[in-house]
Length: 503
Image (tube, rainbow, N blue to C red; front, side, top):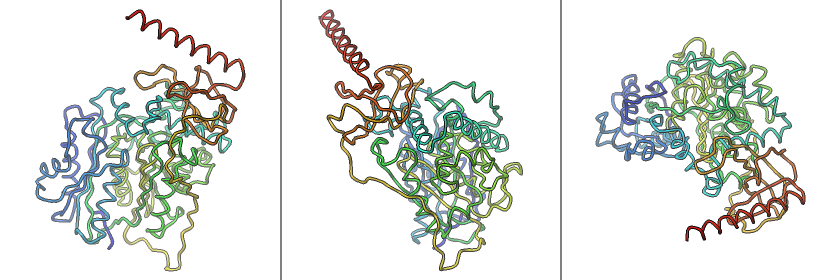
């Protein structure tokens, strides 16, 4: 059964100090219902990542249903970390496509800005695998290491990549100027970008999406409308980033994209406009490559040539993306869907309207790319491919489905696959904190801390040591190794001395 989009709604993203999460969701839901031709819905699907910790609210699906006078209907909450909004859309889609319901309301939201940045960072980090989190890894630190791995894999110099990331940030802020729902409606300059503080090398402040409050909603129905959902795919990957086959791309995105293209009988060349998850600017490049929208390893060149601008051949994030519209984690995926629908209905500002757009795609990342969703939405009268059509999307997906327990011992030497200098580390860790992904000669990839805060080169040979439950890496050489052992011995003596003094 075909599934169509009826009314859509969204509240302006940003800071809403006097509003509750439920009230934001209710406003978005009411707008979607008011704009819907559907007289009633039969079920409610709600996306939210972690309202229990962000706002102290639980059972939000029932709360929203009650507040919009839908109590009595089935109400279900869906959670897949930062792709929860897109996952709620998927749940609603399957409910209608299966014939279980004729129409459903999908709502998603998150409220975050009332908390301090360290508190929000801590809550967001809870989706990271335990060992990596306890080693000091945050979302931005892992994203920075993925960026380094991408740069090394495709031979892109740090200076060239920085220029591309700057262009993405500038583009999305420029697009946000014309989006009344965007948190940031002001352009930034190249000078502002490069003068912004380094958060986790090589990612700066303007490479990171902001902390945001927001909500979005739409109605799905079996009744024919002008826009329909034609393709949907979901993919997962290992929770631990260090356990993945590749660091420079996201296999879960490629898996989800393959499913979505196949269901829609489309391929990347059919896509007229895309909303790509850009919680970090580098994700826009990697995501576009994973989706097949840009050539693998050359996405940064497409950015430099303006191909992803509104007037380019593959416009990406004309809404401003997560970078400028904002990133209320549970809502972002559904907000992307609302943006695509409005593009196809030509209901956006002319400055960000993609002319003649008929097929749109949204790409939502959950966690550090381990629970991802891709959705294709198109105008209902768009010509379809003939029965003999075969998809041309070719992006290899390698996911090791065998759970890998961490080794108790590893080789003393290895190769540095990626690293970052984290200048805003989680509470309790020193700043700067240097973290690295090291593949040891015994074949294990581990996350390790640098024995001393210094710069490294991806691909260089390093020495690995273990102290208690933590791995440390350092430059290859006898002197560094001896210095590490001496410093750890002295540290142990100091700790024992302090204990004796206390006694």
